[in-house]
Structure formats: structure tokens, C-alpha cells
Length: 341
Image (tube, rainbow, N blue to C red):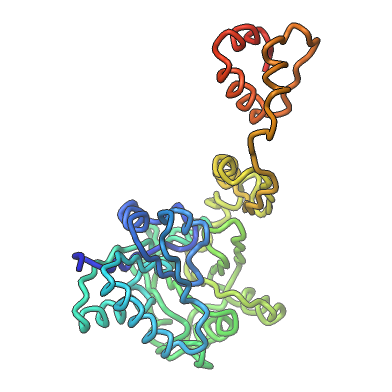
């Protein structure tokens, strides 16, 4: 068995570019990639060709799912396969990475933990909210606002949390976020304190609500149909968003763009659109293939002076023309060298 056989990799908070170099290297080398539903699909394109991709994010019971995932990792490792276990954020922060590591240890499977960017710290940065700032308090408190899907209220000592100064960062489901706000306010956190709630953090679909604690609570009660979880940032630092927002001020932020280029030619355009803030959906609708009968093209290339114009409708046409003319020797290429692309 390889040492280690399983890598517990933090995939980061959503943006596939935020995975660490160490994590990306192990992902590329893996025979099997086991991932959760919050892991971005674009990150999976870095898996090597032929790697087995296993989605374990749609299980009905969290307890059963966790045991099943552990046995799956053990099974694949015992088949002498290198396993990359991709976890949202950091595998040891509000994720069951610790339980999976212990399961592997108990079954004699060597593993390595590859830390990732913690969503509670990276997501506010993408919203223009520094979780710490001189004069903004000396503490950062991370809170998970839910234990599992079966809970109806968070099991947290809110009185102790509300007494802390500085910044509170809380992960919570859409259903529990109003309760989190109420609990903080009821236990002494000022209703007029600045706060922000970030949904789909670090992604082109990111949405940020900002205001006072009381204003956010009223807004959440009014719009109760939201389903996705969010990250609450409470504290004076939330007021910096007005001045420091950078991600959602990009020119194409919030735009969804369908890219129909051939799959092998799409990545460069997708990367450029992503840098401008857009969400790109790859849907290849054309495929480049050689002509069944290249003779007409070869005949035309052999006598370009017989034509008034030769029009290339795309770079693909130029590449194909060059390929076929070069196959006839360099003389045809030289005779066409005066043609503009």
C-alpha cells in the first residue's frame, strides 16, 4: 500500500482557484477522487484522465453517509489506489475530516491532511469584509450555526458568544440564520451593530446583504424562501464593505455566459471571463474534424492565384488550411504567404 494512501484535501470555499498548490498536485495524481456536493465542479477538471470520480454529497442520512464514506476510502486504499478526498473549505474546520482521519487510522490506512482556505475567513474577504482590523476587536469567533440537518435549533451558548468583542463569523443554513440573528440580539449583541450575510461565497453567483443586525433580521423574515446556506459576519469590520468591495464590482460580475466553443478551446476564454467576474457554462456545440475529402482544398491551395479572395472565417480555418498545404510541401505555403489572415 502506498504511503500515504488517502489525502484529505481542503478544496477551499468555492472558487476552484483557491485550492492550494499542494492539494492540486495530489488531486492531479489521484486514481480516485471522492468529493462532496459543495466542491466546485470546475475543480474536478484537474483530475487526471481516467481517474474515478465519486460524488458522496447526496446521501439521505448524515450518520450513515459518514460511515459509508469511511468504508469507501478504506476499500479504495486497499485496492492500492491513491485517493484524493476533497472537502469543502478546510477538512478539519466544521467538516468531518477529523472523523474520516480517525476512521482511516483505526483501519490502518495511511493518510495525509492537506489544509484548505477556511470558508469563514475567505468568504468575507471576497465580500470586502476583513474579519479583523486594528481597533475592530482582538478576537475572531467562528461558530457553526447548525449541527446537522435534523436539528431545529443550534446547540450554542449564545450568551457567552454575544459577550465577546470583535468579530463573529457564523455558518448557518437559510432556515437557521434568522434564529442566529435573534439569538445574538436577544443575548446582548446590539441590534444596530454592523453585519453582513454572504451567500455562494467566492463564486460568480455570490450575493451579499449588508446592514445592521436588526435590518438583516427583518429582511430575512420578509424573504424566507431562500434555500442556500450563508456566512454571517457581525462586528464593526462589516462596515468596511462599502469601501473594500472588489469582487462583486468586476465588470461582468453576476453574468452567466454560455461558451459554445470546442471543449479543447474553451478553457482560455472561460478563464478570461472568470477574471472579469462572469460565471461561464461550457456547452461545446461544434467539433473540429478533418474533411472527408481534402482534395478540393489541396487543389485550391496549389493554385491560390486563381482566386480573388480566400476568406478564413476563424482561426480554426487558418490552422486547417496550413495543415493541408504543409502536407503538400512548403511551396504551396509560400505561394499563399501573401494572403491576410
